[in-house]
Every structure is written in structure tokens, then in C-alpha cells.
View: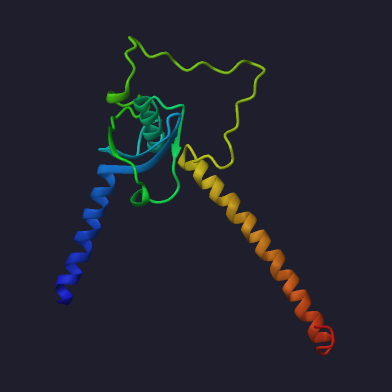
Length: 170
């Protein structure tokens, strides 16, 4: 039994890694008209200019004619919408084939006017890149550590005052 378990664990690790590279799923919530989709990116690979989340959001918005779409928090198992498959291509910056507009040539994005600042996404918007995700996580961790340190200083000060007063100021 023990030998079988030692062989089974690496096999399961390989299978789970292969499954993760093959498809990626997100729960996408859209407005105007309201809808929720379970977006599956077939053949997803971690490369390309566009994050996989944005590929799902863009494809669902175009396919359903929605005003806005975004990634819904929680797990995909809690997503109660229909499953929609989006093909992943080596050029992840282009919209998927099923959702491409019928234009003859893609237009490059226009740069913002010289005096205008780039619009900032809302603070609760999902990160667009892994770097942005890591930066947000580091900032949140630093803020939590600072708060924990301040709380610990206050508790230590109160405990110390209690002890040096021989428990008369507790």
C-alpha cells in the first residue's frame, strides 16, 4: 500500500499540472443586459500580452453585447452561469476567433492626449497583470503588518504599565 501511495502522489501532481495548463476558468459577471458566465479558456498558456482574465471579460462582453463585464469574486464552482468556451491563441492580445469583429484590419490603440492623465481603475477592480497583483498583495501585507505592530505596541505598553504598578493600574 505504501509503495502505491509513493507512486500515486507524483502521478497526481503531473496530472494536475497538465490540467492547469490546458484550460483556465473564470466566473464573469456582465451588466446591460445582466448575465453571469463560466468562461473556460481552452488551451490556455501563461504567455501573451493580455491576461487570461481580460480575455474572458472581453470575449463575454462582445459575444453578449454587454455594456460592462468583470471577473466575479469567489470560485468558479460557485458560478451559476452557462459555460462558454473561448479559444486561446498564441497571440493572446487579439480577441478570440469567435468574438472577433468583422473589420478588415485591426486598428492600433490610440495614445491618450498629451495633457490627459491615464484613467485610474477603481481600487476594487481585478488586477490586469501579475505584477499588479503582486504589488497590491505587498501593499496590503505591509498595511496589515503596520497595524499589527501598532496593536502589539499598545498591548505591550498596557501590560508593562500594569506590571510596574504591581497590578494597581490594569
